[in-house]
Amino acid sequence: MSDAVLELEKIERTFVQAGEPLRVLRGCSLSIHPGELVALIGPSGSGKSTLLHIAGLLERPDAGKLGVVGRDATTLDDMGRTTLRRGTIGFVYQFHHLLPEFSALENIMLPQMIAGVERDAAKRRAFESLDMVELMQRADHRPARLSGGEQQRVALARALANKPKILIADEPTGNLDPQTAEHMFAVLQNLVRTQKLALLMATHNHDLAKRMGKVVEIRDGVLSAV
Image (cartoon, rainbow, N blue to C red; front, side, top):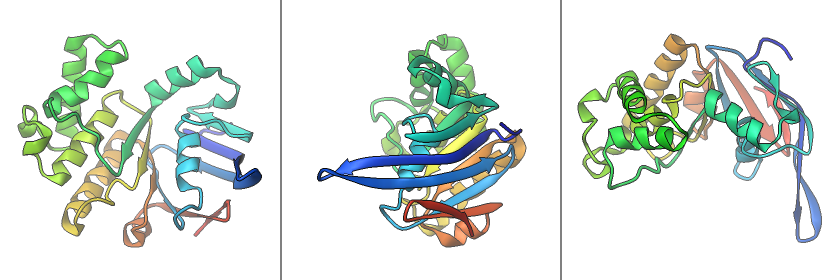
């Protein structure tokens, strides 16, 4: 493996549909380094989400090699993959999935505490993460009292709480109006630059994609640079 924090090498994934094999990923290769923003584009059903799931250690490829912070993740058992994922990867989705009965701070603390982080440490990390996304003043607000953009930034703060090396984002601005999406993207850009994160973001917004360091397209299961 190279010095990339995320490296996919000849990744293959096939599903069975109506009794017939459907090749979703056909030898996909991609390397992402610290401080690099990579946009993943492609039509619906092209395999973007499958690629993100494999990159995020949520799904296993049928063939190929996956390197995460210098480790060959394809050789790890389920517990090893879970441990590596928790310590190195943060996820942001199109929908924030915040728990409505808890405050922004508590929404960030809870996943950490479930993973075994002590309450005081989880609270400290939650405040630090809210500060990174410029939402310290909303710490005690429940989701219903937050705007759509603020809810999505809380979800981003939750993804940052484990101090990941890699952020994987699946249409994080897709449910936001243009102005709010622009602000969300600016926050992501700043985090990648200041925290030296690697960002892999699937998006249908080609204007945003063009402003990222690298754009790759998946079509008919094949990944290529744009």
